[in-house]
Amino acid sequence: MSKRLFFELLKYSQKLEDSDQSLAQEDSELYNALRRFLIDIECNAHYFEKIKYIKILENFLINKITVKDFLNRYSSLYQEIDQELDEMLSTQDYALQKFLTPSRPGVDNLVHHVKSLCELFDLGTGTGAESEYCTIGELKSAAGDLLLRLQMKEEFPFNGDEDSPDDANGANGAQDQNPWQ
Image 1 (cartoon, rainbow, N blue to C red):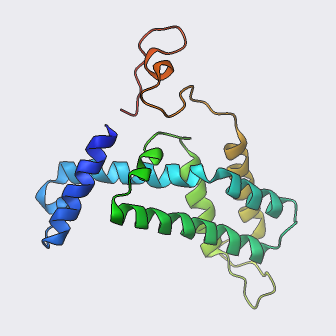
Image 2: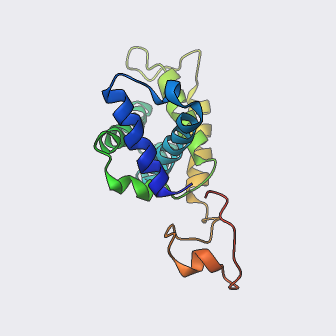
């Protein structure tokens, strides 16, 4: 799917919403295509900020920050990214196209998992007490998994520029099929 298709779907969806209609009701296939784009954008936006996530995760894992600080910083970063995306979507900002290129499959699940654990973790009376739903060990384990995944060398040879000859021709000059298009 192309970047142009995404923006056309986004405009069409917003046009329907302005007239109190819904893309989901109008055309479920187009709605599902738009949802796939939006999920990819959200995942890639979080990955795009991997340096910030890495810093927070490292500081937590080496006990440089407290559990409470980790929960606050991680949740704040997560919410900041989501708010920025909401603003970009509402204005149909073309800067969104940088998030349409695949980044790192699987990272999104770990980012969301750690966010869920942060929400489950109960600080109790401010003493850092564990809840029955999530322990410090579980939180650190998930944080460590995410940190390792974020620090892994890129698995994909393309640089995200769809017009790049390297992307179209591959390293040996043969046509490579991009699985995300």
